[in-house]
Every structure is written in C-alpha cells, then in structure tokens.
Amino acid sequence: MDSLKLISIIIPTYNRAHLIGETLDSILTQTYTNWECIVVDDGSTDHTGQVLSQYCNQDQRIKYYHRPKKLKSGGNAARNFGFQKSQGEYINWFDDDDLMHKCFLETKIAQFDARCDFVLTLGTLNKQVDLEQKIKIITRHVDCLFRDYILCKFQIITSNVIFRRRFLNNKNLFSEVILRGQETELFSRFFFRAKHNSYKVVDAPLAFYRQHEDTKSHQSKKYNSNIKRSQASIYFINLERSIALEDPELVKYCLTLVIDTFFSTIKNKDRRLSKWVLKELYAIAYKINRVKALKSYVLGTLIIVSGSYKFRVKNVFKKALRFIYC
Image 1: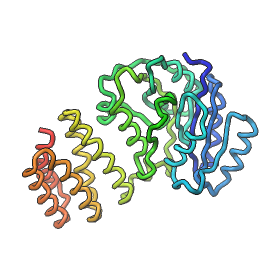
Image 2: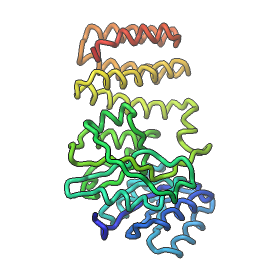
Image 3: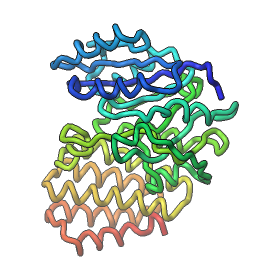
Image 4: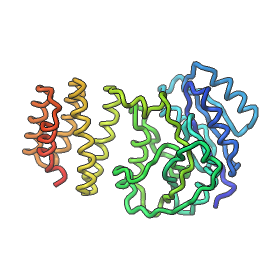
C-alpha cells in the first residue's frame, strides 16, 4: 500500500452551503489522513463561501477556489480546474452532497500495485448510519470492464473511481460540452481502452449517495432537449465502440438506447433533435449495409412526419435496424 502518497479529493460545488459541510465532515474523519481536498466553486450565490472559509481555517488540507470566469460554467469545467490545482499522486473526484465512509480512502489506496492505474469500488451505502460500520471487501473479476459497465452489471458513480495521476496526465478529462452524463462519457472512454491488468474492481460500498430534488438524477426525469442530445451523443459513441468489439448483445443494448431516445424526441415533438438522431444513426448504419440503412432512414423520416410513437411503430423501426447487430 502506498501509505504515504497524497490523495487529492476534488469537489465541484454550486449553492450547496446547506449540504457541503456534512460532506467535508465525512472527509475530516477519514482513517487515511494524507489527503488534500480541492473545492471549486462554480459561481454559488448562497453562503457557500462562508462555510468553506470556516473549514479552510479549521484544516489547511481543505482548499477553496472559484472557477475562473474565462472557463465555461458547469461542474465539468470545475472538476478539470480542480485537477489542475491538485498536487496528489492519486485523484478522486467527489460530489458536494455525498458522504464518505470513514475508510473510503484507506480501502481504495490499499488496492493499488505497480501496474494499477485506477481502482473501482462498487455500490453505494444505503443509509448515512453506514458511515461507521465495518465494510466487507470482495475482489471482483471482470473480463471486459467496458462491457460490464455499459450493460449496467454494476453501479458506478463519480466517487467510486480513484485514479493514479500519471494515468490522467495528458488525457482529456471531463467533457465541457455535454450537459449530462459526464461520468458516463469519461468512464466509457477510459474503460474501453483499459488493459485488463491496469485496474482493480472491488465490492466495497464506501460512499453515501444523497438523493434530493436538486440532484441531476431527479431533474433528468423532465424532458430537456439539450440534455437529451448530450445523452444521445454518448449512446452513439458507445454504439460505435460496441460495433468495433463485435459484441451483438452490447450493440443491441446501445442501439436500443438510441432508438428509445429517438422516440422520446418524437413524443415530445422535438423535431430538430429527432432529425439529428436519425441522421447520426443513418451514418453508423450506412457503414454496415447501405441499402438497409437507407430503408431505415426513410422509415425513420416517415415516423418523424407522422409523429407516431406507438409501440407497434417503434417495434417496426427496431426490426428494420436489426441488421446492425445480427
């Protein structure tokens, strides 16, 4: 175990003065003490600054920054800026409303060996009282990390992954273009190229994921055209990766996500996005079978014109695209 190595915890924050104190308290109780906590304010208008000032005075390991105005607003830019300010040999991004088990850092860093670039700890704590309980650690064998992640065979949120800094250096980090799914985009990209012996996966729920009205998972229940496009762009990239892996099950799963998105745009009468999704889908299908791709494109266009999102219509469109994974 690299017991003397510095871990950088990077937290973007925005108007969470009522929650971030508990998050920082859970960091202060860590059994592994060689850490720094980089908090990057994305433009809060509440009293977040006052809260952070108190914590910075209490412990010099906590450092508070404001996202430079020249950077694009949003958590993604704040995360990337936090990485620039960090000094740790290990990096763990964290959210400003989540909580750490007291052994969060100790358990993770103990998994590293010379070949390991990152460690995934699976699952989340169900209750806040679990922050003190003993955690059972089980090593899990994963043949294809990208495949298992995309097929949702395990749950991963931002805080679940700790990276070795040398792995992140000179890489594009969080996309500052997409509005939703930044973790999915980042993890999909890294996992797709990860060599089998370059990571470790362990069952060890070490973070409490707090759900409330301000969380993105709660907000995403409402249709938003820009967010839907961000999600679709990730689905398309992972569809192409799945095709490259020649994995029919994975291709079918990703294609289903794309088709579901297509019909969601139709249901919400978002024609501009419907046309974009169909165009992107056609570009992928065209590489596989030009004739069938054209037929499916014509069918998709008729569906957009009719505005129908009935199950039988959706099923016909799915069948027209089966050639992509069969």
